[in-house]
Length: 170
Image (cartoon, rainbow, N blue to C red):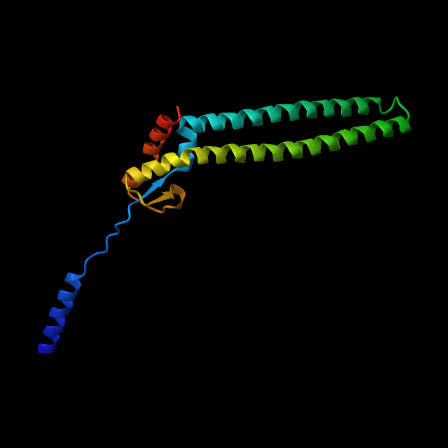
């Protein structure tokens, strides 16, 4: 029994003397999508991307309507013109459709390159502002909110960063 009492006292003393580990590293997280969608420079970048896309879509629709019109004209002429002429015009129409598809693919590729370039430039531009904020507030690590399972709302510095970006990049 005496052994049991000693073991119990030692165990209680041991468990009570354990300190919880507290990290001295200050962590925070931000929502980059919110920064892009609500900061003034981010809105400008998104509007530029949207305008490029709308212009490309309008150009493609115009070309597509022209091709449909040519196809309808050819179908209307089908019984009127000779089969050789019909085949020649059909070959030309197919060539135009092929060119349209190639142009469409090039436009999509070009748009994606422009979009990525503009977004990368935006993030390169805001990076020093975020770094400065981190240094001023002794933040050692900054995480993207998508990668945080749960955290205190006080650790979310997105709105503060948006204010700093809007102030710095007028």
